[in-house]
Length: 248
Ligand code: CTP
Ligand code: MG
Image (tube, rainbow, N blue to C red; front, side):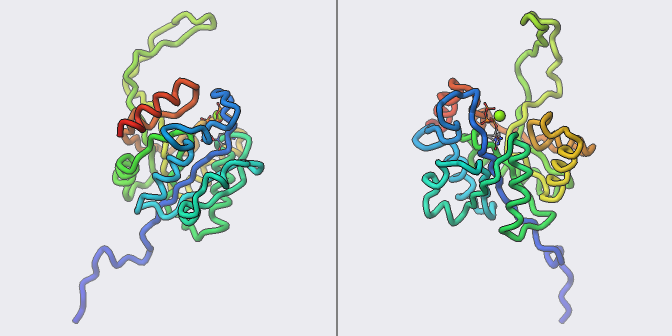
């Protein structure tokens, strides 16, 4: 008996999802004495929060973490259980985007990653990410041609300052969003976007992955994130992250 063709009988395998955590920064603005991703927040190092969240998520095939070549903390942080779900790449660069680009190249060397597989790039310094936010991003971008990122609509009234910290004008906040991570793009597209930004000498000017995609003329989808997913940058941010993590 002939069976009708169903949409599930497709030749291409469903794209897989990989997490890539750039964790090769020094945390200069934090000034903690150790790189901030290794600072303890709510009982464990910030990087462990992100690693544990991805490792426990059934829809994430594997997590890659990029650290600097001389990193002396990562081995201690990886439990044997985490080590089965996560791969350490000691290829950190001088900027976040170089660390991401190096990580993209290195992750393919060890795993069979397809051009259309998704990569979720997530800052090590955002310990508040949880499974619900990952699911929201994955669901919103299912089958999307470009990809996208978690972000929050701006609620504050914004001022543009002159050189002497006096307000020159009020900047309309309509349509403005604050970018968060994860930022989720197809492997080949993200690599091409960062490669081209790098070749044009613009890699130092971009601070997230989505801006490299925008330089290709594409428009990443904005998916509503959460205040709990803040980036810990300054000393006071650690207390706020702790508040969200302990209140969950
Ligand atoms: N990062 C990285 N490689 C770099 C710089 C940053 O992998 N050369 C990572 C950081 O470890 C962090 C994320 O990118 O997880 C976001 O960067 P940021 O918050 O700026 O962290 P740092 O660069 O460490 O902090 P600072 O800018 O204050 O030095
Ligand atoms: Mg930085």
